[in-house]
Structure formats: structure tokens, C-alpha cells
Image (tube, rainbow, N blue to C red; front, side):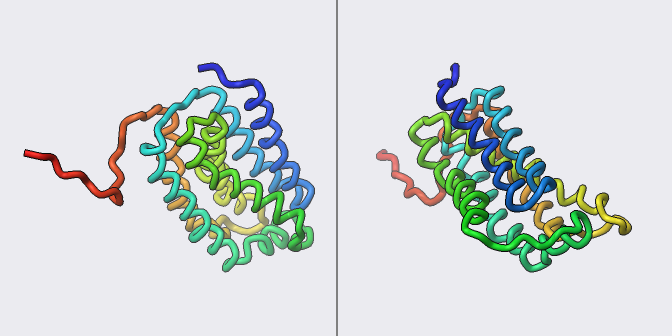
Length: 199
């Protein structure tokens, strides 16, 4: 099914907007990582006309989102990810919190990802686009944590955020596989009460 040109334009602009925020507030290195996730998600959304059901996507979607927020972001914060990048790679100052940074790199992307269930349930194209950006960001762009040690002057070793990516990335790959597979099967929800058949 051919995508609506307006939706394609909206998705493309959003895919460039988030990396632009990243470049402005954090620098080139972060912008490249965001570009991989968002522009990569956009390209795959255009190439693979997914119509996967929400029932088939919801488990990898929720697990990926939870792993990102409760495992990956916690590890990055506890292990001083931004400080280590600034000290060992970019040589710049640690980025400070600002309203623009919070809106551009937290509210907008996470808001778009949280809209996925509602949009996909209604068959909206942009819901699939947002799902693609989530899964590609978590399953491909976050692999940058394994590249970052090569950018330091030290022997290859642990880099903040690396451990949780081992959990996060495979969950996102599962979501990508569901999107590509166009799985429209009705997957039973274990939380929904089952109706008993009459004999």
C-alpha cells in the first residue's frame, strides 16, 4: 500500500529534527547516533510497508521501551555516560540540562514512541514509523556503545551503557522482525480474561 506523501514528509522532517536537536545541544557524535536511529527507521518504514497487528507488536514494544527507560538510561546515568564521553572522546564540557534539550531529546521522541499503541490500533501510518524509529534506535543506534571504546585512547573495555544494550538490542530486533514479517495474527493477551466455550 502506497504511503501518504504528507505522512512521508512529516516523518522525514521528524527524522531530521531529532538529530538536529542532538547536534545543537550535544554535538556531532550524538547527532550521528540519533541520525542512525531516526533516518534509519524512516528508510526502513518507507521500504517495508508493514501492517503488523498491534497484538503481534505489543510484547516486543513494551519490553523494548521498559528496557530502555529502566535499564539502559539508569545504567547510563549511574555510570556517568555523558561525563565519560566528554572526558574520553569529545573533550568538551558535559552538556547541561535545558528546556530545549529536554523537549527535543526526551519529550518529542518518547512522546512519539508512547503514541505507537494508539496510532497502530487505528491503522495510522505514522504509528508504524514511530515503531520503526524506536526499534532501530534501540537495536542499531544503541550498538554505538560498543564502538565508543574504539574512540578513546584506552584499551577496549567497558563503556557506560554497554551492559544494558545486551538486553535492549535483541528486544528491538524482535520488534523489527515483527514489523518486517507483517504478522497480522491475533496474538492472545495473557491479561485478557478468556471466555469459556459452551458445551
